[in-house]
Figure (spheres, rainbow, N blue to C red):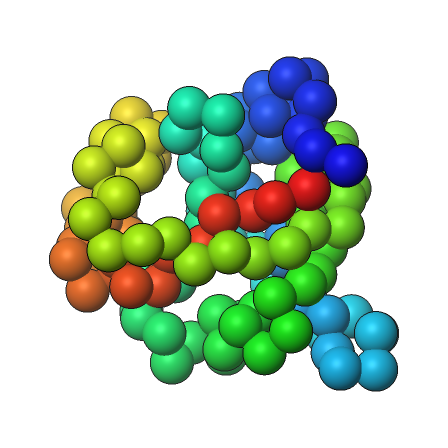
Length: 122
């Protein structure tokens, strides 16, 4: 299964995304609200406060979860983004969220956040 063009557009346009990591027993953890962007044909999320953030640690534990955004609710897999593949994702975050205060945007586009970037795979 993969993203449809409509799902990419709807999730990519949504201001916020609800993300819930799946536990080892298959149940979902409580969802948290974060920012997400579309870059090319991919959807990406970042932990603005690094890899130690709870939702991020849980996402890495099973690499599976569920997202809700823009009217789309879908099971996903979480894939870490290799170092150096962040220019397009940074640009997408700036384009989408720079109307917010720099205090919120800067942590999401800082080099410290690059290691806490996940691609959402449908």
